[in-house]
Image 1 (cartoon, rainbow, N blue to C red):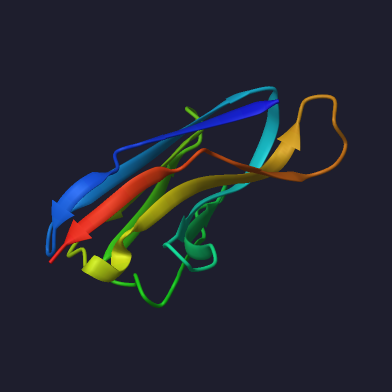
Image 2 (image 1 turned 180 degrees about the vertical axis):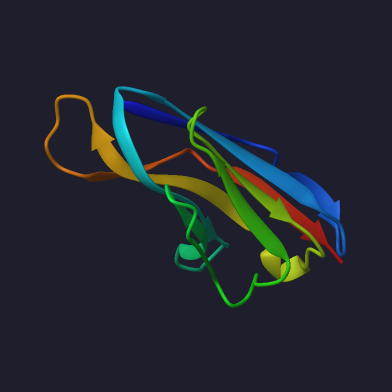
Length: 121
């Protein structure tokens, strides 16, 4: 199994910054992609940003220029630096891992429990 533990969420005023962290542990054989998704009340979960093992990144248009995703492959960690936050960024942010576990042949997608980000106006 794999465990993903997010941290760094909280309450911040509009224009402020937060840095989310996600630590992956467990029977991990290889991680291909790590990323962040978010889900606001009454809305579907949506992509925020992803980063491949090689460093290729992908961002939602709504966060481009305000968010930076980074990975520490040695530590199996992924980070999301969020600047100039807006009330529309309020959501539960979920860490996602795409990879293979030890002794399992198939690639899987795994999720953390989420961390709440609330941006006040």
